[in-house]
Amino acid sequence: MYFDSLPGWLSWQESLHPVAIDLGLERVAAVYDALNPNHHKPLTITVAGTNGKGSCVAYLEAIYKAQGYRVGTYTSPHLIKYNERIKIAGEPVSDELICEAFVRIEAVRNDHSLSYFEFGTLAALDIFWRAGLDIQLLEVGLGGRLDAVNIVDPDIALVTSIGIDHVYWLGDTREAIGREKAGIFRAATPAIVGDNNPPDSVLATASEKDALLYRINHEFRYARKGATWDWQAGERCLHDLPEPALKGEHQYRNASSAILAVELLSKRLPVSEMSIRHGLETVSLAGRFQLFPGDIPVILDVGHNPDAVKTLVAYLSDYFPGRRVHAVFSMMKDKDISGVLNIMDAAVDSWYFAPLTNPRAISESAMREIFLQSPVSKVCFGFTGFTDAFNAAKNQAQPGDVLLVFGSFFLVSDCLNEFEKSELTT
Image (cartoon, rainbow, N blue to C red):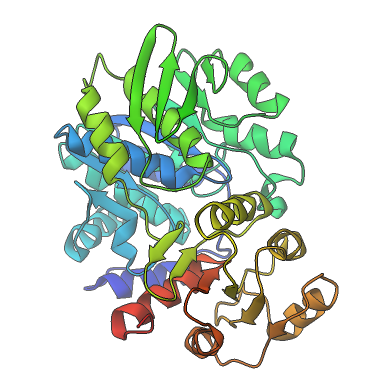
């Protein structure tokens, strides 16, 4: 089956495989072997974790770009355009390039059924090895051990954090989830762990695989000191680093992990301290504490699990203390919505539920039941979608208040699309 446009390919891929999420490497590995029998690849850093994957990829991309290297990044999901998932030198690749990769994949797929995500992963790997990159940065989509990204052997494996999410596929304990995330580790290969308190399963997996383990606060560490911070691993020290452009205490852990990955690859891909500093100062990431300043600032965040919103509460407390917060909110029905509400309640003054058309999203009726069981007292329903809910929140906000849009990639995507088409923030 072949199509003459990217939307045509994507629409077909969404319906090709019987289930949207089908963890396992056998099918996608077989197609990859046919597509790239010699397994050509650039230097590779693979990043897994419950939260912080996108941030670590963004730091690495910014640092390597600052050094002048040709960098490819594969991330998911996208916020506005599918092409955001596959970037070279910081820019989304063209529809044409992706379609050409899909044609090559389909030519060797035979009777192997592939999911939407697996098609995209193969396309990214195919595009990257043909592009003459210096390095590719691969973000795991779900878990690690059985994620399509794991068909590639990384030169560095980085696990950012372990929290409770995607329990249907990964398990409902940090130990079970940690083992899945650590599935990206390889023998005699650096395995970086940026979680302050990693589950024993992560450490055990590193030992079982004979990976070279580097744990934050053990083999590497950071120390804040006012407006600057220090980083250290063994005898290598970086002093008076600039505050990361991505905000929140957790970003020091993410930045520290990214710096260690850069340092561990420095013999093969040298990077100056100046480039590290420049990368920290210039890094950006849509949808993560993304701020639109103004009399009533708007903050977008894709946090959708308890650990993620804990950092969101801390961010609001640090940067907007004492402000009234009006939250436009929606989530997928398989998430720990009650846990998120319980954590966010102290930070939010009024809630506006924005229904989503995605079939995985929580319905308004189900959301009403969850709110009734939560400590939240002021919540508004009855909106047709994001724009309706956002305008209602905006009409209630006063100068000095904060508008917060959070809880789902799909909600933040709707927001950014509306911001492109209109001036909702003004």
